[in-house]
Image (cartoon, rainbow, N blue to C red; front, side, top):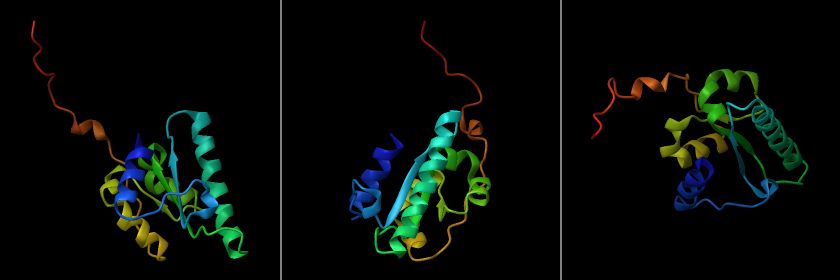
Length: 133
């Protein structure tokens, strides 16, 4: 669902979505932060995307930046950014509304500070809703 939402937002803002990450200026990796095997796959995907930046320097790819989004980026935020410097940006859910601007900033060499994760359970109502009998 996140991938479709982000793809729709980016396409609406004029970004071209490509099948092959080597053809992308920015590789956006949708991460999972809950299932251990998926966490590993997410880190592997970020590292593979970083390899494309190296390939771009040799003329074999276009990729200039790697950005982590999704549950792992949301759950670990600054910690993920610190532990995985290969990612040029780690964007949380609150960044989705401005995803195009965030990617433009990162692509142009700017830095977008990773968020500090917070307990989103505080957004839930304090008491349960009344149910009809």
